[in-house]
Image 1 (spheres, protein in one colour):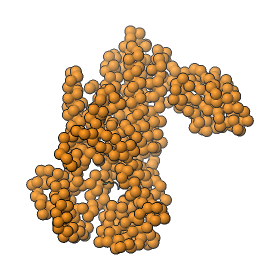
Image 2 (tube, protein in one colour):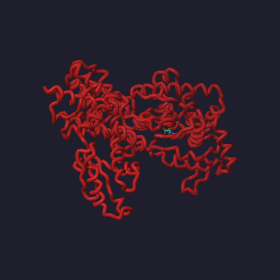
Image 3 (tube, helix red, strand yellow):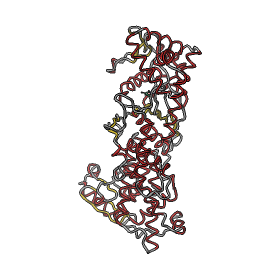
Image 4 (cartoon, helix red, strand yellow):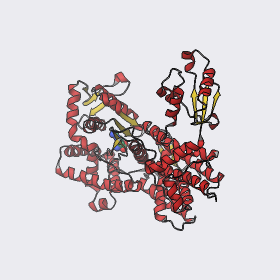
Length: 572
Ligand code: ARG
């Protein structure tokens, strides 16, 4: 497709204003108010070198480019050159690009040949996969999709919390109070019960803690019975997690969690020692970070066992060696900001300059609105239950509408789960938010169902097209778009045009909400167009042109939803 910024920059560059086309392209803006043109070129910066008032420079530039065929109109306003491009040609360009690229529209290859790791979800085994995990899981998956869409080779890693002293406690608790039958029936809920009981009992009887330490030491030394039990807990937990991932349609390329690094720890300890970075403090081994205004990073505890932070150091080194990443992204809550700062500092002290390519992408907290889930006080809310409830509630809403010809089971899943995902991605990720059913399932709000409904509406309009009309649209056999001139049609086209750029920006900033907000704008703009204009008119040419824009909108919405990890049903 024509890159308008580049094209305009080339035209302006002919004016000998002392800037290259690349520099000009960087300066060109998209005015927020369309009254100021589709593109604007500010001339402030030129005043000094050209020794002329910026308004005069703008006036000169405007009058020398106004006859270029790409423009409808060029105006000078203060120090700006405001440019209005030819609508007809613009709409034709955009629509034909979307039509010919189909599901590839929005993608680009800026990342070609580079490997990016996105680590996300990373729940702890033998612990509930609760509502708090949804953020890393959903934000991480869409960051993966954003990088995939911009041409990077992406590796999805689930850094499972499957190691650490708590497994000593878990094994002791299971041996004391657990049973295989109970475990089989309800693995995580039972493990959670044993674990909670362990803590209650250990308060009365501290010898339990000693026992847990011994047991963990046995696990670290590879004693078969302990390893067997730990494996069983891991396997059962993964089965539960998989159910949730399946509902969300999320996959991973690697489940190398914390335990994967247990045999890589001695080398890290040796390296820290050799580089003179580690010393003893009250029996523990630490890296002092006082010079960086941070508490020390604890590398091993006084009993010699390794820690979460140590495993993260080993993981980063392993990933660099194994994947030679361009970026190594960690989608983890803000609560772990300090941990990641310390860890980066330790890597820097070790002399690893690639530490700057390791990026912690934090996000805020989710809390549930009162009455969201009926739980007894203090009980954790399982993510699986929330997703099931979303599907159930969606089914109730949809059942009230005309449901002829739709598979209600399938649609309730796609819309209910899509609503939860969309909500997660619709605010700036760093913001805390409150989960509320009324908000996420509002079909008229800025929600997933609203965007999906808009997509279904576009699909339904297209079902009125004849095969011949569809063929013409899909081969873009349309001479010009002289009937598509309304403001609403033009605004819609401009939003569609910007999608590839928006996808790149969202990836670069690790911020899926940039795409989500843009998608809401597209949906709202389409609905304005739909209400303002008659699409299925008698004039065949006019009808085909308008249907082509509807088709381009439908493709674009579906592609953006796919990048967010959300389905786009044709009917709902
Ligand atoms: N398992 C951890 C938790 O649930 C998150 C792991 C984050 N990733 C990492 N490499 N430290 O809190």
